[in-house]
Image 1: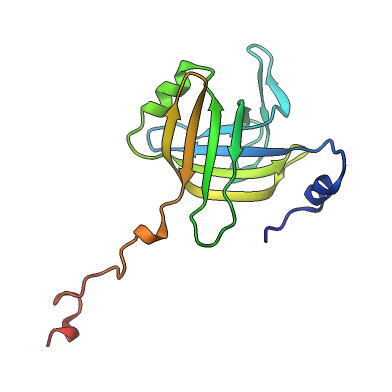
Image 2: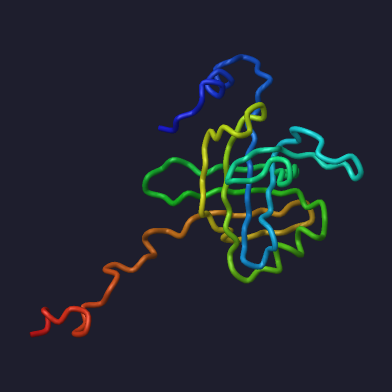
Length: 174
């Protein structure tokens, strides 16, 4: 069972609420100069010309003044809480610019993604968080970029980790 703040519980239980959930994404890759920080809410206007909206949060050590999470039109299916399955999420980014497609197609190794859910009124209080997820696939069409995000399955790890060879386990080979 996931713990949430009192404000989040009040929002969920209320008939009407002015609170909304915001999903923050941080995408990192060795080939990126700086992490890409995205938000699903246009919490405040960050810049006038050109107009840029975003969310200021100190999540993952970001400086809210100089490193805001930029708003993008996106929807997300968050990872579930099932014990026997790896955390998996789906993020649909609206395909607004050719630069998004160029960036997604430029990587040959998976990028790392961290996700957090916050309330728009309290962006520094984390309601839920997932880290060390990988972009497993990207489906691109004219309308959206659909990212499948997951962890490597634990079942894919070798067990036992070492082979029972003479060099590693000499007591077995007398």
